Length: 242
Ligand code: G3P
Image (cartoon, rainbow, N blue to C red):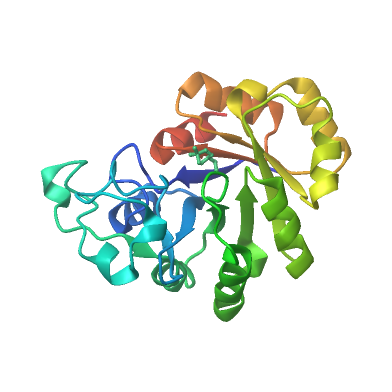
């Protein structure tokens, strides 16, 4: 099976991350999947943003958890990246799912609950996935194994991936313990042995964040199931050469 190219936070190397322009561009550039990050507002609306605060990627300040959805909607999430993106808004999960539903994308929702604790994030996300009937082409991921456990206790039919940037003695055991059935690993962890272990246990192995062409080729050659890249067009070009 060939490697699925996920646009990391949308095509975040070319547009403001996790915004509609980044998702639309990923589509134009031929990405096969989209990876994005989910957090909850003060009034429990799931929204797409990577950092726990809005400081880096908007003209506002403060923790996402301390701002209401309406307050977040007042912020500009594009100007920090380039003036031409002025007026770009933070995207809600609902808006994203409704946009992606008729399209042929694989979806990866990363639950950003490893620093801030969002009670019920798993149930809220699951409910939206069910509403849009998108469970089958979505993988939920998290660095937080407790969150993966909670999600697994709510749904047996959703693919769950444990994220890691740290070398683990026995990654397959860590996955089993929390109920994950896929592994999303930092590129530094990628070895032939890890690929073989994952293959042997039928565990999809997807690698982040792969922006260098030589690294893309290595992932393809080893047979990784997916890569996350800020530059989906580069990845598609390399895949064609592969
Ligand atoms: O989900 C893959 C990758 O996005 C994980 O790293 O820091 O971008 O959330 P980070």
